Image (cartoon, rainbow, N blue to C red; front, top):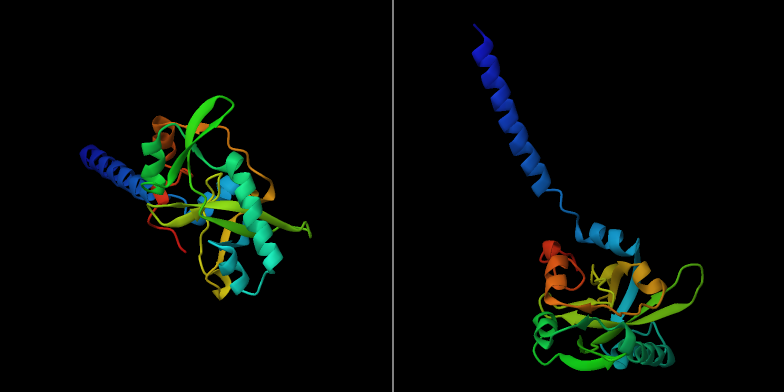
Length: 202
């Protein structure tokens, strides 16, 4: 007599389970901070500037440090800037007129213009690490050449302080892979973070 109600209860339970699983899956995307940690390690504090004058004005760094940081970023740009197979693909992410043609080892590609530099202090008294920064037009945020984004802008109450994955500044990054439209789509864009775009702090 009670076999039918039991079947109905099992069906209802299965339905609820499916809904619950779907709800859990939809709410379990990693946060920007967690995604950054997975890709680039534990966060570390860095300073980001668009110019030497902006850097010196903070009084946290000397003129010499700021100039060295910018010079290092400019020198490293030829080997660390992200590379794209098409101008349009590069400009989709960094803005019209913001990409230039380059060649390396017989390969032609396009890279975004360098728009800033960072200063980060290495662990265990290892000195300072400098690097170039690129602004993605879609979210107007700074990224390193490896695709690590700077988040929590204003960290420590100062507008030029950010956090970034420690591996993004622990060693120089040489970019050799030329990104195609299919590779960019599969990764979700430069840095591979389309699923979290729009929800980042900073």
